[in-house]
Image (cartoon, rainbow, N blue to C red; front, side, top):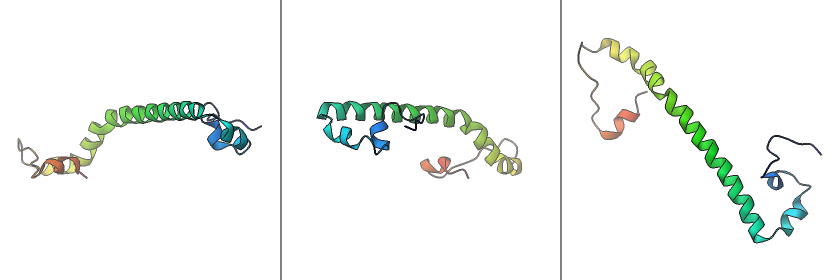
Length: 89
């Protein structure tokens, strides 16, 4: 049988050979598998959030650099609405 790095907990969702085993699982077994898949997904989202949060300031500085070069000395950027600060591109 071919194995991949994703054959750990969520393998019955990805392989057709386990279809009969998947259908014979009890409700508790399905819930355990769902819980493990959700935990893995939430962990991946958390890791991606941490990585994205660590690069947001350098990325914003890179995008805003041309605008900040033409602003007068000591003048800040002014956003006219609360959400405008999130759309700096």
